Image (cartoon, rainbow, N blue to C red; front, top):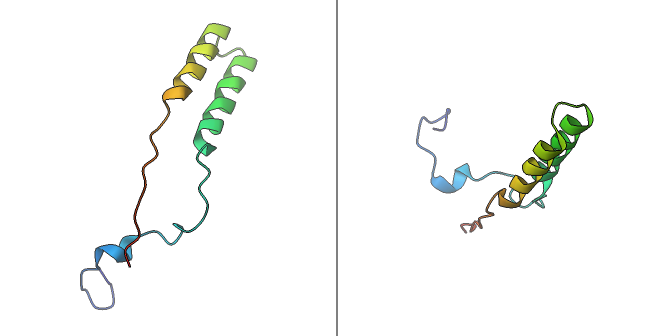
Length: 70
């Protein structure tokens, strides 16, 4: 809703202003990898647990495309 007019906003108005910025596709994957390494290095996880966690990163996410409305 537009607070000034109380009208519903069109769908294209809800698109993020940051869509034109480059996307770091590996940001969250690297963040998880660092957490897994920290857990292993501090003794919280065993070597086997660390390796198992790293294997899970291969199935991390599917990137989807978006289309801009004009």
